[in-house]
Image (cartoon, rainbow, N blue to C red):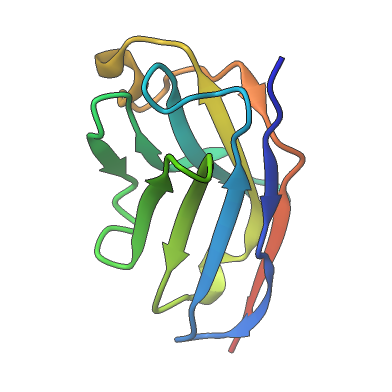
Length: 125
């Protein structure tokens, strides 16, 4: 079984940037769908960004143009570059993986089977 370990969270002022990292040992991007999700108190968990095994990406409307998902296969690491952060981006961010098909991976409510422990992002005004 693999491990998903997030890092890079923290506190930042609105308008600032953060880069989250996720060590994806055991979940090669060539066969796994990888994604970033977030959840804030009182809200449902939502998919922020995904990348399937074909390299196709999909973003939530709320982060399009501000966030970028990428991966470094040599380092087995998934990234989420977050720019122009807003207070509403404050949440616990989770890295997730699933061995699903490339097309299913990108649908809005696709289920992911493997999760990291999360990293907190707090954006203040």
